[in-house]
Image (cartoon, rainbow, N blue to C red; front, side, top):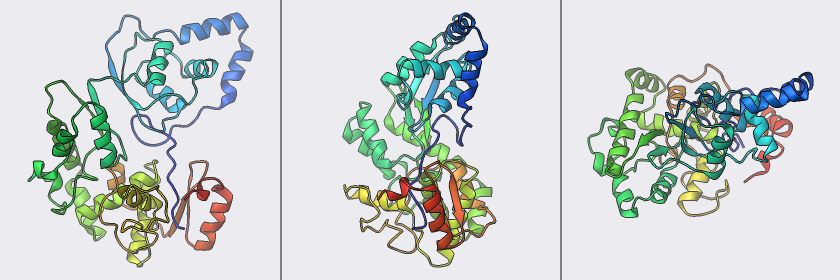
Length: 354
């Protein structure tokens, strides 16, 4: 099995992983400070960053975002006094791991208690609509309906015929839907905003990804733009770290050229989901690239710039396998024997999944 289920280790705005601070730092800090000073530091640190600034900022928490990643995001946006105090607050109030994905309106005048209340309750802003990274079209449809749009309106807005002639869709096969072509982003929504305007704005952002440089890179790999989108969508679902993506792209491209199966679990899961079945690698569909050689019928999710760039500029390596371990690290190998050994060492839990 060349590829295993992807593990998301971060989920805040932007891509790539955020280094987790050592747990001992906060403990040492608490030991070194007298209790009264430590309490004073804590109370000051969880207070609002700026009580006089109530200007709301849009903060997107993506699925799988760790508490540390969220703390880093808030701190970087000038919404927290201390990342350590934020994490300590979560621990003391039993809130670790309970922050919900969504788009939030946060201001510097909010303290940690108010911010975490919003995140843990899923108190998302109704004025923003977010297309999430690595999101499937079916999930977006369900999200839009849940947001209050009528099903018939959603289906009409997701009909590619509505956007005939859009530059983002120039290389999309005529019978294909919009899977893979809707760029992840947050969009302002008012009562008068037509859903088609949001979809078109997303397509505009996708078109901006298809630069001449990217097109030349894909052509150098012998790929059409649509094939580039397909492979980028697989990479998007497989790994998060933009530094790893070029090597993953190299693995897939080499396997295609050698006539091997792509061997991607996430394509098999996608095919099963289309049939309303439990997502497993054993489900026989045209998307099961562990069973069938060559390309799957189409993209399996939306894509990011880093995934598409990885396909256009793959790493100069000669790997044939990779596996994402239980620790979230992606391990590459050149032989099946080496790959199996890495699975035994690093993938004791995830590799037992279907």
